[in-house]
Image (cartoon, rainbow, N blue to C red; front, side, top):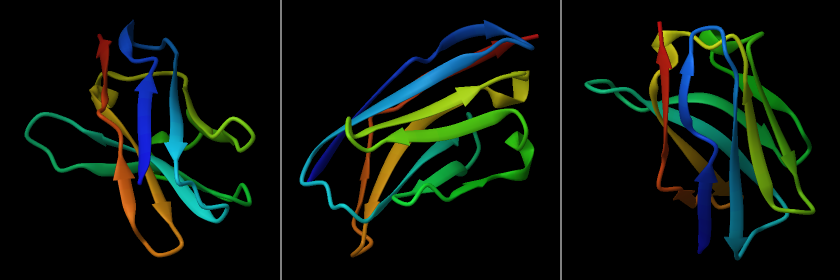
Length: 116
């Protein structure tokens, strides 16, 4: 079992920046994929960005060029740098861990609110 704790959410004006962090602990496999998902009110949870153990990244089109996902394997920590934020980025952001056996763990979520 892997435990995930997110931090860094908050309220920011449009055009501003926030950095989310996710600290992982527990039985962490060397080979894994970590990612950030978000869920806005009345909408389904969607993948925002993902990064593999090797550092290969993937982003949803709506955040490309504005968000950057990164990880520090030594610290078992995942980051999401969010720049040029838009009101439509407002959502609860969740950290996700998936191991080589496709077992997934979720964090508790952190609220990001972007005002216009």
